Length: 312
Image 1 (tube, rainbow, N blue to C red):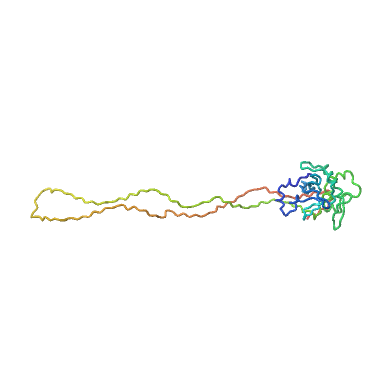
Image 2 (cartoon, one colour):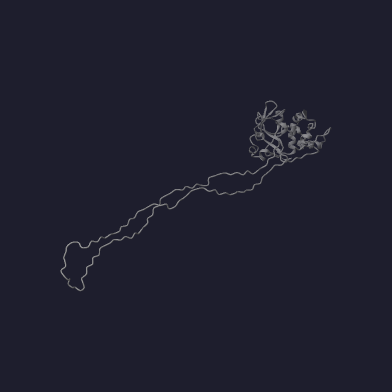
């Protein structure tokens, strides 16, 4: 079964899992052996790509064994959430020194995993477990009473396993619950994630319009016709030159008075309302439609033999 680093598969795991999830902070835990001997700190985890089950914790041993990275089977990890600690009860410094070293660029095969398992089997065989209200230890085949109903493990019948059985045990995680099975109260349930579309709107400023007034000046010309009166005096000689009968009176003084009038242009300016402007806002409505591919995790259950599995 292929193994993959958790942080490589989920680079944004803190955002996806949320701050309230212990799984989002697993790399903040320190590893201790039984007592107060600090082994190192959690660097990452390895999980099965087919089942999503975490199988190993990658431990940076720091100065305990000169910065060596090793794999710790998940079943041997006892979590203390209060102190952010993981206890690997019974783990010794000699075991860590003899453990095969892990590097990020290596390919994990069955031979390498068997070397890892061999270094921890004494811890797995001594690990106790609660089942049906009683405490049990693993038997000589590294199985617990009731492990088939709990984990889908097919237990060996009595007797000595054959070499083929030994190879099968080495290649099947469920055959060694002492190393890989976690107590139900020591880990969180498997969560299946699904994506969904969130339709929301962001309001932003598209622009601004300012409306004001300014004065423009232009020169216009207007013509106003005016009239001015004048007196025309015409003098002419009589055509017949006949004498006037009688003796005319010769008087001095004004005989005819005539007044004259004239016009002058009276140009002035007056203001009037040329146009009225009202300013308001109108909203244009539109519907934006987009398509996205959504992912959804589905649970795959695989088993061997005839386990008693209850799906609820």
